[in-house]
Image 1 (tube, rainbow, N blue to C red):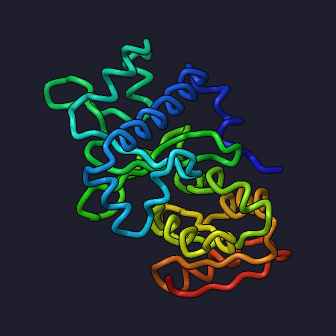
Image 2 (cartoon, one colour):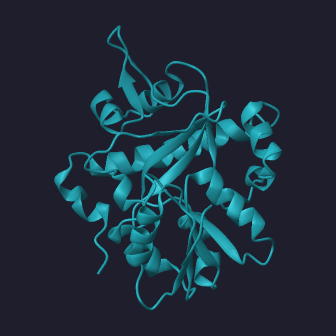
Amino acid sequence: MVTTMSDRWSSIPDQLQMLDLYRFARMFYRDQLMVRPYEWAARHLRRHGLGHALEVDAGWKIGYAPDEPAYLVDRLRWLEFDDEVILTSGLAVVADNGCLVDRYRDCLTFVARDSALAEVGFVGQGRHDVGYLDIPESAIYRKSETLIGVAEQQWELSNGAVPVIVDGPMAALAVRAAGGEAAEWVGIAVRGGTMTRLQASFLDHYAASESVIVALGGDSVRRRASVELLPESRPSRWRRP
């Protein structure tokens, strides 16, 4: 049985508010990207051959966090989320003046999900490709227990597409684009450079393919350790990304 992060939420106050907050944040970020088709974030996706993610019916609901101090915070307050819940979500931080401001600003956003496919966090990437900005780990979000790209490609996974494990959502998107219309491969992103046992079990629950490709960076020891966590029923290949 897969233990989900959502299963533990009964001990967290305002759990339903948190679910609603993340759901709204995902839609908010998506809307902000879609109304800016000619700004850097959309151009960045097109430049990397990922313009399909900008289509209205795209499976990947990539978003954009505007470069304003409290654009999301203000909207969450307008929706009557209280400051404690907003701060606990990790989507806001306390500025030097004591005010809540957005954590993610001027960056692409990607949804991280638990094994129940609940939205439990975000990963951001700024315009200069200097790396990813992860939401802080908490009782709700833990890197080692979440994946990026499973819900977005659930149909492909259930129909035999080969999962390719990569470190980062942009790489996951590139794998899906390389898979073509036949969707031979789908990219599934982890954060932290390795796959954990919980993530392997999570993926196994949704993927029908008999093989998995592990294409993580880092040293060979970490890559092989990730491979060894995959179920024996799924032979895997590993290679450098």
